[in-house]
Image (cartoon, rainbow, N blue to C red; front, side):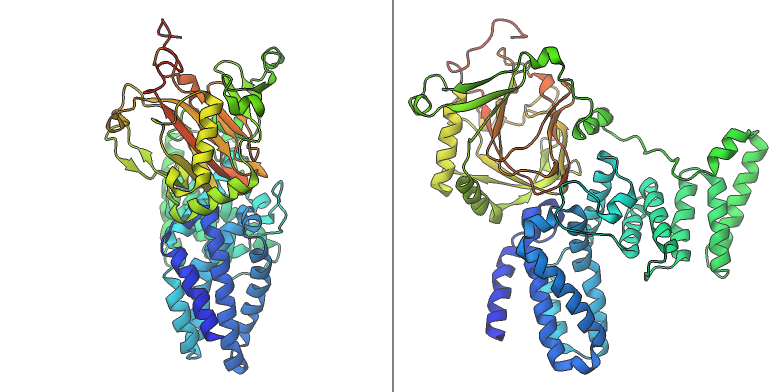
Length: 535
């Protein structure tokens, strides 16, 4: 039994050692944590057999975890498709299992502690837990979900029930607070109070919540409510070390404001309302348009435009292979022309590509427009890998197929990129081509700019995850086995700025895509230049 357990541990250690940390950026990698957690439960149960008499609390925990992991391990991707399950998995492995270690240490359970200590080096980190919390908040904002909806797990397309406890919600609020995000701190701390008032049991107490909440509303400029909440805190904990000083400070500021300004009744009324705080404006100018499209709102597919969209069989410039078996082509947008192809990849090909890509997945990067250096960014949350034709015959086969469909050569194209999106995985609005005002990102390749994008959808997504074009008002939803194609450059070689696009956050599901970026060189006779700048 011990030899079998050691073999299992070594197997998933080998996988996890390649992808340590940033688990939240890839649901595909988070499935490994399901098996890791299942192994931990088994180890814990073996220990209980030895020390059962004095480990009743730990045995209760193990039973709870066994039930959970049995369900999650049966369908890891389906289970993790629910973002609350994904968040709670990261939180459990980063926080809750450490509490179990403390219990075991009290009973001198050296065997289990040694096992857990060895495995813990492959656990999610604080960065993962805060990243998972940010992901839930991103979904909250993008899809206009209130904390109560997320806490109850009432998300579209979910097949697993998942709820956030009081302590989970408190973890969300504390994570926002630690990052200076007082807007979300207020929303989640208010949810904590709501669940506590409903009688839910928790380790956290109201005085802790009011401590965070009072300071957060102060930072948002609501002095009236800061005073009110601090007074409530002092009534629960008169000896609180900071509350007394904070109250005197808040009251002094409030008095100074009264001397400077005459408050009318309307303003005074607003100051006492809950949830009137506005979401802070951020760096993305088209944030509202982008998020509306992600929700399926504001799509500019007018009846007139829709009449110009057609379906047809595509024979790829009479390529012999496509004459025999043409692809179904559907117009997704007219100008610029965006098309979708059906049955581009089979289920078997998709699974094989995922299989060879998964060990190579690494946090997706973006190129700094000023320095040209690749770096990770909060606006791109996914993991990706690059596959060469020598990696597997299926890669070469898919490359040939994209070449036949587009009529472009893959000889100067980039490698096939495979991406898996994590919790709330997204890629905010961006261009695929290199602009004239930034460092030439593709100079070292010697193949010119990215002329076109071919994007394969390798999974269905239960909710969210659309590809949207904010300037066009277009939204394209993932369908497994299909692919979309568009040109990034006009025939003149100038960038088509209308193709600025984004991958919306995945609300529910596990999103896999692969893409091929075609470059200018080698396409001179396959896509001839236009005679004017706007061709």
